[in-house]
Length: 471
Image 1 (cartoon, helix red, strand yellow):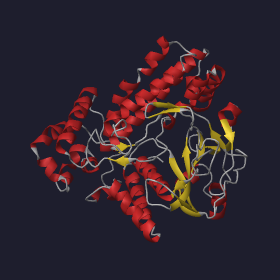
Image 2: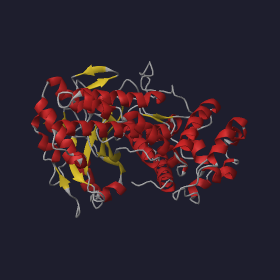
Image 3: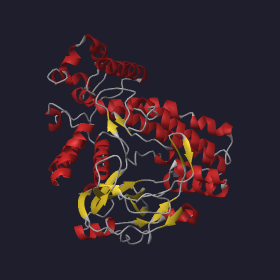
């Protein structure tokens, strides 16, 4: 840990923001995933396996960070119903440290690390399948250019868990995620619910000082307004990136939306097979509240809840324009994310908008495979010959595609188009549809066969390299 730079900034907020807790003692610790690229980036790449397990399976404190893990306190709206009985129920903030590349603060948070005061009768554990799914989600999203938390470590823990939504007993695990913040919209909601304006003011100032120092201002009301605008823009960017990636998070409650705009806390997620605004990920989302096409509205709704919390600190007249930046930012970021996926430069606001306005109706009408389309047309018109040999070529031969093809002629490929990469010589892209995930999990469940999981991670790493992703 020669270059490891620890921190314990969250403790500065005060004891009313968290509860010190102890990690569960597991009967077994088998390392199943280690994010070596990010371990190197935070100065932990030199840990041997025993030391890794000691820190991320037994939760021996990292020197210089928290001596005890912190279970964070928050409230939140869950499927639009307010819940004041939340908080970290099966996880905690284990440590904080600095990104050695950009000097930004990072959190190491857990999932499945045992019971806390906020467990609400749960066992505080994570199934191994849940852990595997989260690793696959974060790796895939990062490769596709989505600003996501990183799965840092996954360790199997040797317990038999009972669950109602998968065959039980089932295997257990503990996950460590790396994220820039675990401060949620629900963190603010708790303080507003309690009427604790002093702590609310302190939280605003902490968030700006630690995560967004460029937003500082002499006046508290202006700082609160600046923070709201940044969170609204962050949420808009995230929802745009999900749209471009064809990703459905599934549970966009206000305790699952953090201020830095990272996708995190994965449960029933899915990727789209084809464009369908009504596609849902969670079997319990019976009304489609968090369906694919509703995700931007869901994040805008959550940003509005933050605005409500900040009313005691700033006027509605100043907060409303800050909140209203969400939709213009979403449109801007969606166009940028789509062009980035296709490896194209902007052709100007008008043509960019015309292309985006034509693309989604075409995808909806044609039902072309979502990921295959973006794979085939990487580079736009430059890939016409390659797309003609695609398994989806019949979709592009249809007259309905002609307006899209014509619009693509206006776009020049970006410097990062990278079509010479071997990934784009494949017939099909790497996908992570529900059937792909189940095919990866089945041999693990049946015979402890991990080769499919390792192959999938290697495929995703190659895809990330092809798309020029910055880890």
